[in-house]
Length: 116
Length: 107
Image 1 (cartoon, chains in turn cyan, purple):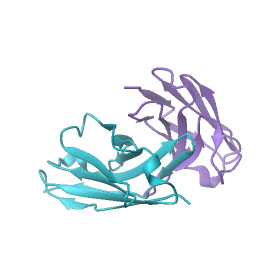
Image 2: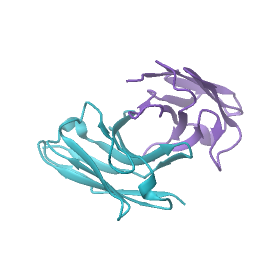
Image 3: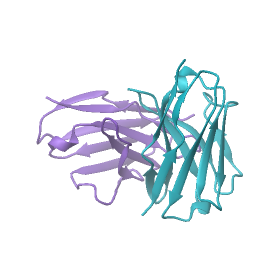
């Protein structure tokens, strides 16, 4: 069974940093592109970033480009999102997700709150 | 970026009704479209992928159709558990985009 479990969320002040992790199991982690998606309170879903299987291709939404860094450790079946210079508008539940020809798999999310 | 326009934004219906939600892509996405159901405080739950493939365990009253730029999600005989928000998602390009969501409310 595919499982994605996020961690690392919390309360941080504007301008601060946070590192999210996503632990994966139930599939060959190193073979799949993975993504981060976020959802602000009461709002819709917003794609944040994606990373290919070997980290060759990395993409970001314009709203986080230059502030967030996605990475992965295939030996540890883990996905990461380093979030720097956080803004109030980055407050959201962050999900790691895998969506491809075989279907869609999402974690339960981790809440990031940016507030002074 | 590919834009996804979902309609309606809100839908009032009764148990037993048939409901249809539409998603339109700004350019062709073939059949790289998923539909999700989301309830408050929960992660999105996959209903349909590849435009028309029913996820394992999802009731057969849910169905998806379409290709290219026009897609629909149909719920036949709406049940009490189906009152929720629904999202479409395109995954044709590396940057996914989502519809704005459709909240299905009790009439």
